[in-house]
Amino acid sequence: AQLVIQQRLTNFTKTFPPVKFRDERTRKRILITGGCGFVGSHLVDKLMADGHEVLALDNYFTGRKRNVEHWIGHPNFELVHHDVVNPYFVEVDQIYHLASPASPPHYMYNPVKTIKTNTIGTINMLGLAKRVKATMLLASTSEIYGDPEVHPQPEEYWGHVNTIGPRSCYDEGKRVAESLMVAYHKQENVSIRIARIFNTFGPRMHMNDGRVVSNFIIQALQKQPITIYGDGGQTRSFQYVSDLVEGLIALMESDSFIPVNLGNPEEHTIRHFAEIIRDLVDSESQIVHMDAQPDDPHQRKPDIRRADKLLKWKPKVSMREGLQKTIEYFRGQLASGGRLDHT
Ligand code: NAD
Ligand code: UDP
Image 1 (tube, rainbow, N blue to C red):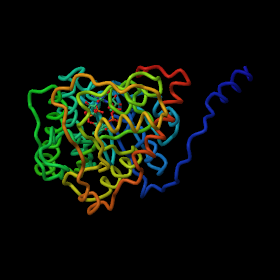
Image 2 (image 1 turned 90 degrees about the vertical axis):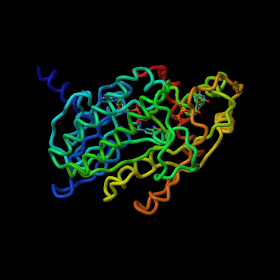
Image 3 (image 1 turned 180 degrees about the vertical axis):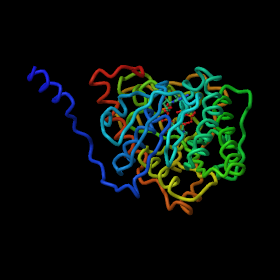
Image 4 (image 1 turned 90 degrees about the horizontal axis):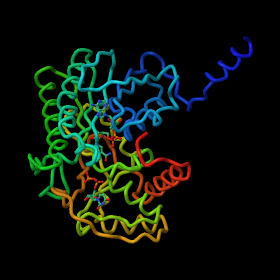
């Protein structure tokens, strides 16, 4: 029997990443919806390391327990399996509301659910914020600008979205979510923050989420053709995930209730982006063109003067530097037999 007890204790002994010590006065209880996703899990890491109590809530649609498994069992960490479409009650000081599929194939997979998550889910979290007087940050998106006619996109731009196109479940869902945030702020005095996030990449992106960064890197690593949708003249600006996490926390800690763009203004055509990845991977992949995607925005680049002014925030990691780290991550995943699914 002694041997069995000994064995159990050994199994429970787990080494956690270091966390800062905080006393009760500065330690916050923080809810992160979508906490097992790509961005959410990096935010969990940063807030845990800063010594806060973190509750990660997720329905595991696109997120994975694996992304936060290094915290499971830590006294400051809690993992909750829950869908934000249903109300949730908890005492917290801050809410980072990230729950929503983010890549086009994921959010188009079940458009009705995407709309429910972004509307009913946001109402549920705002109701919680109102009740417990928590500050709530919404992970909004550059997609609220649609296929923009103004370039680069400042926060004052109202956008150009096709309400009945394939992207509308996400774009309009996030637009309503922003409207809900503002309505709860004005009517119910809820303390709000709105982050308009531009294309973000880094380790823990899904290998098969269909986004351009993961697609091109995996294709290049596997010597498969790199698939450009359309002529590749469309542009995007890519930010590395650590910059986004710093921006989200800076915004939460500010007193800005107006929307703030968070992105890296380094803009590339998708054609050029394919060449950069092929060179960085040193791959022999061919670059091929496929049908253009309906309603694919032609250009996208954040105007980040507001973030600079209000948050003193600017991205620090160059696209190439971020890509190197992401390529290493995907290389490791493939080498360890990482499966091309979300399990
Ligand atoms: P992700 O898919 O990796 O993470 C989203 C997380 O939300 C997943 O863990 C998923 O399981 C969870 N989720 C989805 N629906 C849910 C529901 N109904 N209830 C509970 N959990 C649910 O995507 P991500 O890239 O980490 O995106 C996080 C947030 O940032 C999203 O709100 C997204 O719209 C926003 N955003 C991301 C980007 C980007 O480039 N990554 C750009 C703009 C905006
Ligand atoms: N794209 C591409 N090939 C791919 C995946 C995406 O050419 O295999 C293009 C896509 O059409 C879009 C851009 O890359 O113009 C960015 O797509 P992504 O899905 O990453 O994000 P979006 O900014 O469209 O939400």
